[in-house]
Length: 364
Image (cartoon, rainbow, N blue to C red):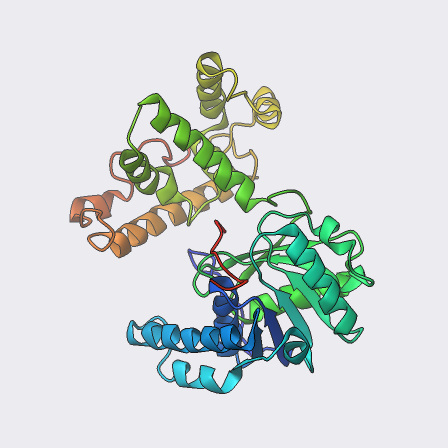
C-alpha cells in the first residue's frame, strides 16, 4: 500500500481503498460528478442519482466527457477516462442508487429543507451499517441530523470546488456521530488522495468563515474606492495569497512576528473600529513575550530550530511555486536573481532574527 506523503501543497498519493466498495452519490451536478470522478479513479464503484433518470444519465455522460478532457490535458493518468465508464453508472432513482451501497453522499445544492428531506429518505431506505454524509458548505450538521432516525452514522464531508483537484476536505461530525464512522471517512479521504481535516460543527465550518471574511473586506476596499476588484485580486494572488499554499495564517503570523501583527492591528482598529480589533489570543502571546519565530515561540512555532526549518522550507517552496506559476498565471518569469534571493524584496517573512439538483455550483 502506498504511504501518504505530504507535499508542499499538502496533497497525498492515492492508496488502495479498503472501504467502501460501492458509493451512491445523490445530486449529480458539478460537485457530485467531481466527487464521483475522485472515488471512481480510486477503483470505487459509484452510482449517480438525480431528479430524474434522464438527468442522472446526462450527468454521467458529462462526467465521462470531462474526464476525457482531463486526460487529454494530462491531469489524470492515461486510460483513466475509459476506466471511469466501468465504475460509474447512472441510477434510475435514489433507491436504485443506494441499493448495495456502503456509503451514501448527499450532494444537492444548498437548500436546508431539500437536504433534510432527502437525507431522511436515504436514512429510511439504507441498511443500518451504511454511512451517510452531506456535502453542505454551511448548513449545520446537527440540524440536518435531526431528521435521521440514526444520526450515529451521519456526518458532514465538505469537498471543495473543483473536488477533483482541491486536496482539502472538511470532516464535520454531529454530536451523535460515532468515532468509528468519522475515522472510516477520514481514512477513505486519505486513501483517495485528499487531506481530511476534522472540525466542529459551526455555521460555515472553518474554510467558508475565513473565505467570506476575506471577501467581506475585499468588497469594502472596492466600495471605498481604495482599489479596483482587479487590483485586489492581483494583490491577493501575488502577496499573502501566494504564501497560503505553503503556510496557514498562524504560521505566517509567527514568521512575520506577532508583535508586528499586534501593532498593525492597532492601526487598523484605530481607523476601522467597527471592522478590526486586536485578537485576544494575539494580545496574550505578545504580552508573554512570545513573538513567534524571532523568540522561538508563538501560535504554532515552539522552538528556534522549528522556526529555522520553517524559514528554509518557506524559501524553497516560494521559489518552486513562483517558477510553477511564472508566465502561466500572469506572473513574470522568475529571474535567476529572484531564485537566488528566494523571497525577492518581501521583508515581511524574513529569516528569524534569533441545472441538476446538484447545481448550481456554490462557493465552496
